[in-house]
Image (cartoon, rainbow over all chains, first blue to last red; front, side, top):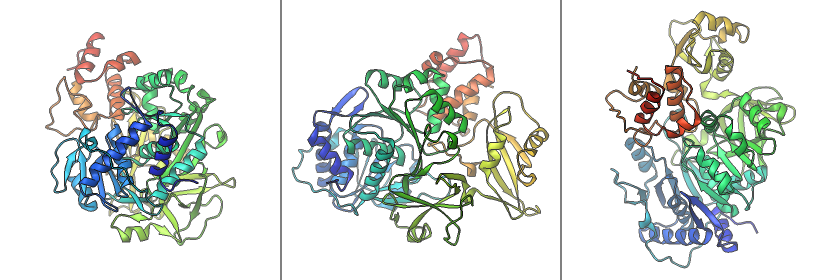
Length: 484
Length: 77
């Protein structure tokens, strides 16, 4: 019988192979027996502090085993985990804490907030573990994850044990990873992608290597060579970093991997093709998803060689549709909102009933992304619903202009935004921010001419500005609103 | 342009924050993996050089960047 929760699955794995390594962190190997013991100690600590069913436990998403202990211990108590970004500014952290009113907050140094706080270190392991705990039910709330979206204020996404279990089961089914795998996790653990990979592997009984980001890729190569890593999860910008820092040397190491999972932001077509070509025996999977509905679409770069500009097809056990604003399903090739349905979908936002109501239509979760489907079921992304620029009633997607601009030989990357001007006949005009490859600076006239053959005239930006870097979130999403 | 000015621009660091030779990723929030690459790319562009994977592996602070440049007989001011 399948377990009802990730934490139940983890304890089964620990029972089945207690001596197997669960976590490798800074070259220290921690067995399933040790992790399960530490989870029970942490649960005991939290219980002594008054944590019970439905209480929130907030803790820093530090990449260390204490995160795993606290996360699973919180679930063991049927409490709700609230992982926090370690880089949260104080004001923002206070907002998240006030929204969730945690019973306990764990962070490495003292912070200025009114909630009971404790150090996030060995202190949590000092109690003798209590023997009896009962596992949560599927419908109980497991996590509140705050989205790192590029617009608006922080939203706490509620996830049940069923949601996070489905996220693990679906992605394992697609990727094909199992308990024999050892996966490198360089992603932040407070973020939906990194956290899903941690849960998924511990649920399966696999081994995870917690790595410190992408800054020093030699760590990955050592993990593959010396620790026998078979998989890695990455964001596209992470791969670009590895490639930039290590040039083609990544190929000889990554070729040994059974799988790579990419996600969180789009990847350039030429990079997808390059990976498929350079890593012929590695399963290269890329998901499209949101915190609210994890990895709901998947694509594998070799299987979909001719469709690499697509997001992919619906993940196992997930339905994906394209709907009009009125909730009617769009015909093949017609652009509408991408909506998803399945056990992965959130029940809504923490203490935001209005937002929750607005986010669903007939049981479908509205992603806010626009796209279309082809006759084979591949889904294509057209843009973000709220990034759409309206030029005299004609809709323009910034991503389309950026794709055209990025083809200019002098342009490395770009971001387009709308500038509202009351006196403009079109209501809005488009401004392009460009990052150059070298020192050659094309004139606005040259850029406009370059775009003329590629875009309709109304899509050509009127303003161009050169900058050093496009602002992005930690997961690599463009933050166009920061340019406004 | 000094290395400090270049890094401030690349990492969108506010005016008034002091950078020293010892400053590294631990000290600046925006000096993450992506920021690291952006710094390296900006240094390559600014001084028209290519930094090898071995040299990149040694860069952990602003002082390391200056040291690497000095080895190439470049003195940014």
